[in-house]
Amino acid sequence: MLKQSYTSELLQNVVEELASLPGVGRKSALRFALHLLKQPVENVEKFGRSVIRMRNEIRYCTNCNMISDTPVCPVCSDKKRESALVCVVESIRDVLSIENTGQYNGLYHVLGGIISPMDGVGPGDLSIDLLLSRIEKGDISEVFLALSTTMEGETTAYYLYKRLNPFGIKISTIARGVGFGDDLEYTDEVTLGRSIQNRQPFIPLNN
Image (cartoon, rainbow, N blue to C red; front, side, top):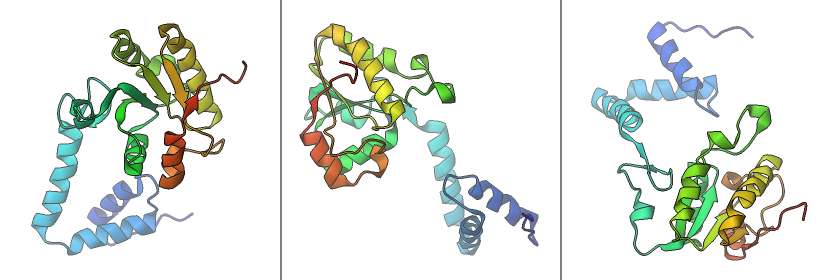
């Protein structure tokens, strides 16, 4: 494929940077770049500053590993949340998806990924130790495993079950309204909400 040429190297540089974003092709990147070019300078500077500030100043909650502007995120700080229930998810996007359902009022724990030997991701690459330290404090009575129903998600859920089972707490998972192979991020809010409400005890596949 021939590389598209531009009359401006400055424009080309911006297009290439925008095209590096997930789901953004070169045509969309060019459209975004030309849109920014038409905006007042102060608007573009504000846009750039917000991105740089996000990258430099955003934090990860010391309790649940969720993104936050403060050391402890608003969810963990909310006294109205059900603190004895912790929903374990793969990513920040999953937290946002679950929150959008309005069907969950507990806390979260973001693993930061799932176990995937093919991708070189093992248990030590995830925030599992942080989760176990929360359980050891004795304030949690149920861990809700809301992981994608892919093979990697099921493997991660089984590993967590083996690590959590000795604590004697309730371990549950999403109801099968979410089909096997589905990512939570792409599950519609109604289906996901019902799967949360009807969560069921986690039963290892080889039991």
